[in-house]
Image: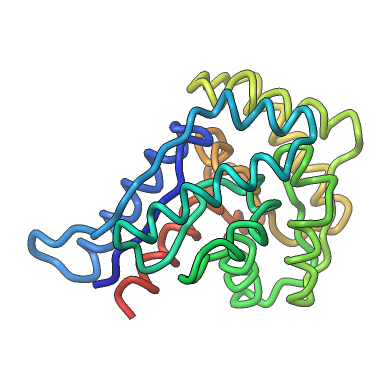
Length: 229
């Protein structure tokens, strides 16, 4: 079994889901008392969020690259960034290490391709929904992306940072997300990417009439596949 290097804390609410899913999946596949070999480095998300809001992506990338190098030195065989948004700095991290980085968008696109879907709605932080670092990675797999209108993007983003990252799960916010999802479906979306690792705390598969791609679960299970390969 390979050792998984996790960069977490963005937020710790979703990082706990990574730890749980990874270990549950190892137990499911191997049975007995098996659990995952992993190293977790958890950042102070306040510092990362400040870099995001100020547009200091280079600084954020250097910080995470330093953490990735430490995980590599500690024995990690590959790196998993436990967040969608910070994959914006994945190239900086990849240049700093000699082990693979398992990209969340590639893992998600593979699941979408498996279901033979062509157009997908994307929810996430404003950075993930509006910038190309994530959408273009999905498009490279031949998948069309639909995003909410500007007003909805702002509210989806607010709920992530002001509620979900703090573990505050509100029924009213769930209703709002479902309304936005319905609008994306009306635009032709055949499925929905929960493109922020906290959204899975709010929206479940059974809440939506089309396939839902929970990136936290997909990424975590993909990490187990690589670890056991």
